[in-house]
Length: 126
Image (tube, rainbow, N blue to C red):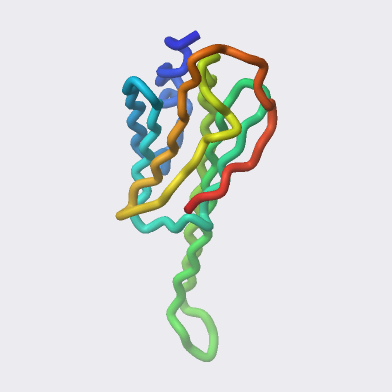
């Protein structure tokens, strides 16, 4: 199960807008770091669904050259969604996230004993 948590096969199907992701484990937590330069916390939605942590990002940027009529107008839209299988020792109710210096960091605290966990939850970004 832990191998699936770290599985990077999603890269084969990812678009060029897929951010780089680090997964770190220490004695008390798993940390997921998502490189997100130019993004804001409002661009992300993080939730748990069944036994997965789902990270979704959507950014719609409009740039245009003003004139009485458009000679050129460009739209830029990026989206990203990735699901990580959660190990059994994660305390889902205590997952937290913060956005700092272009890095989204999600902390998944470990628990000592494995008990049934809450399946679906939305996680606010601090």
